[in-house]
Length: 134
Image 1 (cartoon, rainbow, N blue to C red):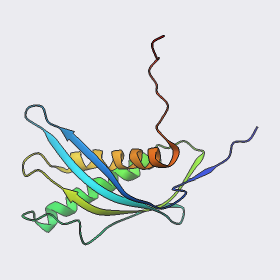
Image 2: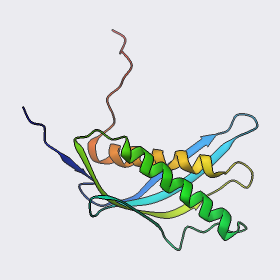
Image 3: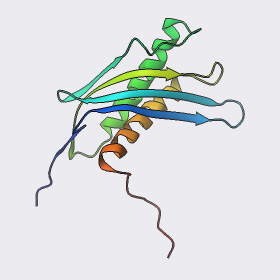
């Protein structure tokens, strides 16, 4: 029996929103990002739009958040099942930060969540791994 190979994404996915918020006590984390996932050549191409700046943050600080987001995207895509061929251009359209609680690790996790949200948009939610009560 052969299994069909799927290509991700099969169609353009615009304005995929990812939020990572861990607001308990110190330290907390917050990242909000919006990205597009476009069919592309095999592999992962990542870029940021001019609109993904943050008022009051230096270009170097924002670049670090962008790099962390891209790293999270690549890490999550690398973990996909072998039956899925990744051929995607990811464009980070916008980010929102909290002046204290936003940091690269939060944006790394938001990158992973963005991929999970894009996959759910295309293929539906992942199967529930917890046993259901009878």
